[in-house]
Image (cartoon, rainbow, N blue to C red):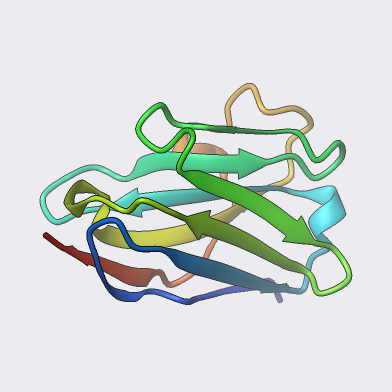
Length: 126
């Protein structure tokens, strides 16, 4: 049974930092692309970042590029999202997700992902 559990969310002032974790069980990170998405109230789920299971390559949405860093620790079966210089518009529920596809061609599309975590809330005060 696959389970993804996010943690690390919370309340932070604008300009601050948070590190989100996504602990995976029932799957091996090396076989899955791992993505981070976020969803603010009244908005659609939005792609944030992805890291390839096979190559470790990664990319980000334009809105977080240069501020967020995705990484993974295969030994711990955990994916991280380091978030710096947070802005009020970054506030959302953040989800990690797993995609067994080869390649990242469809990585920005939520329907590509087979498994999702329950989400962790990030609140940024101005």
